[in-house]
Length: 453
Image (cartoon, rainbow, N blue to C red; front, side, top):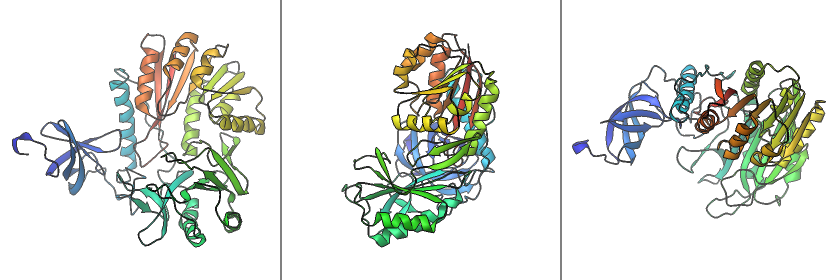
């Protein structure tokens, strides 16, 4: 570029050398960073500069001059448009390598760990067809057709899908056909700008082991003419469909689900088998999207902890007890802490369903409950949301000094930040970090860090 000036709209040639934690390819041009979606380290490309800053720029791929050896043909015909996946053009082995590197980089840069011990990533059993849950925005095309799919990258333009290669293939018929039923019924599709219409999202869920399915429509109000008749028709048409529900979300918000869900036909949950236990999972329940990989990570946790049956274990942010209940079978006493009362209700139900009686659950914010527990646990499991742990939680652990902590994270930046706080006084040491690929074809990575006194 002339006079070393960044120019928006200009075409430049870049060699891609790395991947960012958001999934974009990263190259350099005249000592400055260029982010390029849809590229792979090893690609040489022509890009158009879009958002230009003094030290970096975001750009758009215009031409692939030389493909990387790690570049493959995507499994999905709309992979270059759909925002559901970022990495279908990258071979799976390299995805795993990039994700492990992402964990190492976060631990070094944010956590200050000089040589973190990070295991190879636990690979998904299959990098396609793994999702047990999908929630699709619904819209209307310019020709008036009801559509469901994911938004185009960086836009609010919907890419219509009749199948999705990363969701369980048994859900594809529902994705293709339910839209047509919505069209025939004449139900109004929600318009985000005008805040008008009824149908906002289509939610699909399946028990990977049982095959039971749930179908949920996210709506702005309950008054959906003919919904009971249509729900019964869906149950007849799809033998594995066990429940049809409405979830009401009348707010102007990006949140998908509202606070209340009503079952219209069938039952309000599906059954799933996980870690040799049976769980009831509702339409709006948090349950890991990749059943098999979650189980594999649990096995690593069990192996590493090597529980002897006399321990007291606390599972913070326990949800419906996905980790609490399998681990409770291996300890003397288990306690689950969870903010959402509905999740705790399901956790108690699931404990009773599996005849696990040495576990109790408490409703409330972990930062409030943990300091008041009155017991010193031997093991604490932390599985917080993406924002990580509240500082109060970290301080409480540093005071109570449980012998072992397992921190399961869905965002490595906040994992690294919190591990630094736990370890900076020298009280705890990280012995192992095990990443697990819950979201193949995307840049997301989960990791479990093991700490000892």
